Length: 321
Image 1 (cartoon, rainbow, N blue to C red):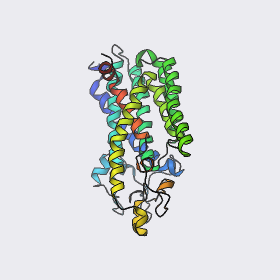
Image 2 (cartoon, rainbow, N blue to C red; image 1 turned 135 degrees about the horizontal axis):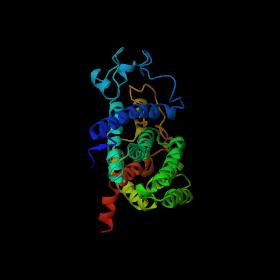
Image 3 (tube, rainbow, N blue to C red; image 1 turned 45 degrees about the horizontal axis):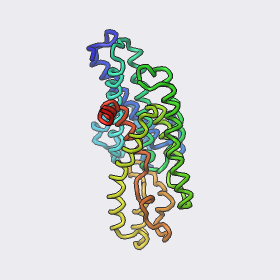
Image 4 (cartoon, rainbow, N blue to C red; image 1 turned 90 degrees about the horizontal axis):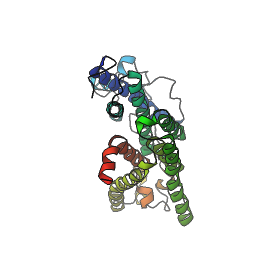
């Protein structure tokens, strides 16, 4: 690995992408909170989520991670606790940004110009940013926004059309990956609907897999599907068994029923949220099943995609020695 790029010391480049990553992480928090609520992600500026306060957040209280630590995780004005999710997302995005720089330096061996390294960093980082936002929205709302997945498809295709020689994924591989990524999800969705009369997977999962295929190429799809399925089951099965052993929410009072509604917003967010239709407490037809009590599939697709993005070469050598 070179000590400098275009005369710029490598440590400065690392510090820059870390700061950029944390800043984009702060923006990711805005996207994750506002997009599902159909609120503008641009205006107004961030404010305290406590409705009794609502004071705009000052610029010096909006420095990623650092401001949270200096404020001891509370609003400066009303001392309402701020969700730990916010600094964690900022920190995660910063780490992903640095990882994308290492990926760019690895792929761009012999590429000594800063614009080239910046391009090799920017496309994977944009992909990671969208995966992170999609993950947290899907976890909370059971919904993958097309307004995030469709640009992700475009970013993947553009990256491999412009930089295919360096990414190792040709434009044709990316195009095939986009189509091949969506088809299995659409097929499973159609078969499940025909057998059960209800949707087993959403169209958002198909768009997400198309995004993954466009960025990583069709060669990554078998691993991403297998890894996401296995890792999803490792979480879903214990969760389902734990819920089945718990007292059914429809046998409890109103307070217990309300607490059983999935995805209730945290106190810091200040907004209540509806659960998936089949989880409404008090509905005898809404008995827990594996499909209804399991976690959404999108976050595990995102995890498998990140695993291939950063460790795909090692995984391929392990699978095909």
